[in-house]
Every structure is written in C-alpha cells, then in structure tokens.
Length: 114
Length: 172
Image (cartoon, rainbow over all chains, first blue to last red; front, side, top):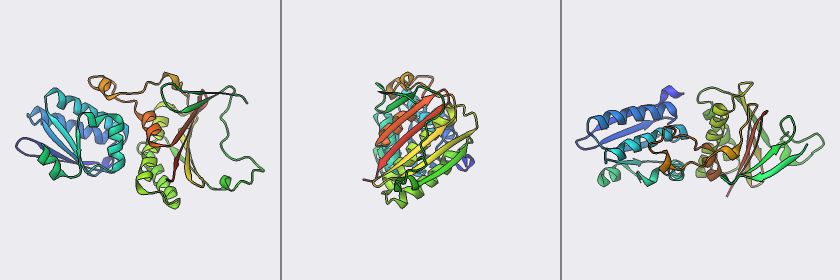
C-alpha cells in the first residue's frame, strides 16, 4: 500500500506546488520532505502542498511535515496547504501546524495568497 | 481483580492500572443477554506496514451502518490509525498481532484496540507542542493527543502484559 503514494512537483518562478496522492504515512512524508529539501536547496522558499488526492494521513507523516515547516521557517519562506479534508485540517490544527502554515480550500486561493 | 483508577494529569483520559496478571476481558461474559453484547465486530491484524488502513475500512463500514456523518467517520478513522500505529510501534507485541473490536452502541461507536505487548506508563508521556518540536530531533509523539482530541471518550489500561485502549465516538 505504501508504494502507491505519488508526489508531483510543479515548479513555478517563485514557488512550487507539491501535489500528493495516496496515504501520507512515514514513506509519503519522506517523499514530501525530500522534494521540499531539493526545492529549498534551489532557492524556492514558497511551497503549496495540495492534498486533493490524499484523504488519509498519520501523525508520523505529519511529523515529517513539521520538519518541512522548520526548514521553510529557517529560510524565511512560506508554506501552505490546500484541499485538506475537514479531519486532516482539524488534525493539523490540533498539532499546531496552522501556527506556521496557512490552509486554503483550493490551489488557486493558495497561489493568490503566496 | 483490583484496579486503581486515576486520571492522567497530562492527558484527559482515564486509565486503570491493573493490579494483577492478565488482561481484562472486554467481551461480554456468558449469561449476559444484553443486546449490546451481540453487536460487536472483531478484527485481528498483523503488525505489518499500513495494516492500520485495513482496519479503517472496517471502521468505515461499521460507522456508515450506524449512520455516522462522513466527518465523524473520518475522525474515528484517524484516531484508529493512531491507536494502531502506537500498538505497532511501541508495544513490541509478543504475538505480532493487534486486536480490534468495534462495539455498536445505541448512540455511539466504541473501538477497542488491544495488544499483548510490554505496556507503558501514561504518566511518562508528555503532551507534545509544536513549538518545542521545531528544531528538536524527535518530532513524533502525537498519537495519544490526537486520539484524545478526535474521540469523545478515551480509556487506557496498560501493564506488562499489554495495552487496551477503549475509545468511543458519539453519533452526533
């Protein structure tokens, strides 16, 4: 089941969109983390994480997102999420991710905000 | 069988520490003809990657049968994922299995997650905060907090013979 997680990264001029598909568990989280590291390395410091095709996460995967947030904060960047299910948004809120990342309904709204 | 009951100062859960050997029996005993005793679904899953997702399929089926709304079903699933992952990762389950029971109540769904692992002391578990997790080497430890926040009641029993987590969610 873990190997069905997919991540598509679309780089734009000043930001990037990471579109997930599948269960964001430890392996999914690691793929997101690696992609984010590569983008930050290139100087892309504004990230949109699109969860439209991911409706299941676990706290291990989210813990890796905390690492991503940490790195974005360190480079004075911004990170936001879109298309979160209500429960995932609630989970992010419980864990405090919303103190450091914004949540938008759609990718367009996230892009407009960035 | 004697129990000491106390509330964790860290988590808003009740935990009974079992004073003697063996696990408490959450199945209804012979002679109990309560209709609630019949409405249970049991599942045993192996400690294998992503098996928690298999359990969520059953949770979804049961909660839909009980006419839970989709958001509340999602919350049950999320809490169940966290409970199972905790059992997988921390119990060192002696038999390589985690047992799950779904109890259909009149207005709520109760889920029992049980392992025969080494147990843990809830008093030793710190409630995580993101500010202290940033730049910390260990960023995990969120499972119990999520279960507590997503479910309506949580009860944990743990000793050297294993852990039983009982959590329930009201239909409304």
